[in-house]
Image (cartoon, rainbow, N blue to C red; front, side):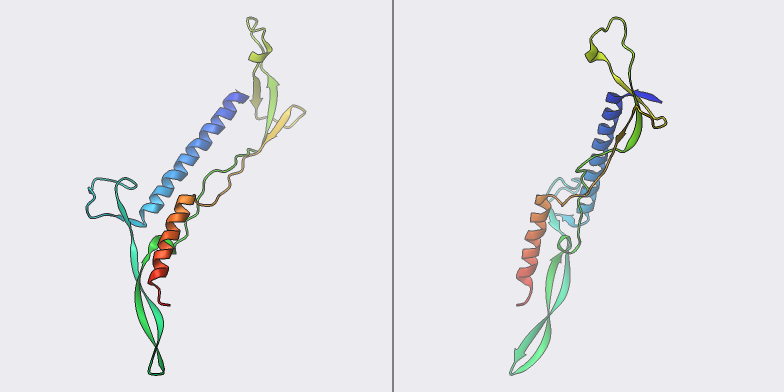
Length: 165
């Protein structure tokens, strides 16, 4: 199989863009499980359109209470947003390196194309020799977006305000 280097790189770029789109769509689907539509919202709207409220879970948190010198444990119910309990990693494509061995040759120029700038590098998958090059692809996870971290932080503050001192 032989292709131009430009076509190969263009195909790789398109594949990376499509992979990132897929990852973004998956993030939205994961976030959707942490929220429910507001009561006033049109039921036809789909996440992330419209207004959404965090899904909450009631939890009993023990609290030491001292009465007349006797210490007892009482349970205090807090409403905990699920998004503050479960970690969500962001898998955005931060860096792309492709590692492969390619045979590089200059494509033959047409007679009516004397300009060297029109010459294209042709690549093919062949045995390694003096005309091969290596290209490396690496996909790395990165930290969640700042907006997500701020949202979780706000829900954590809400949770902390409910916890007994």
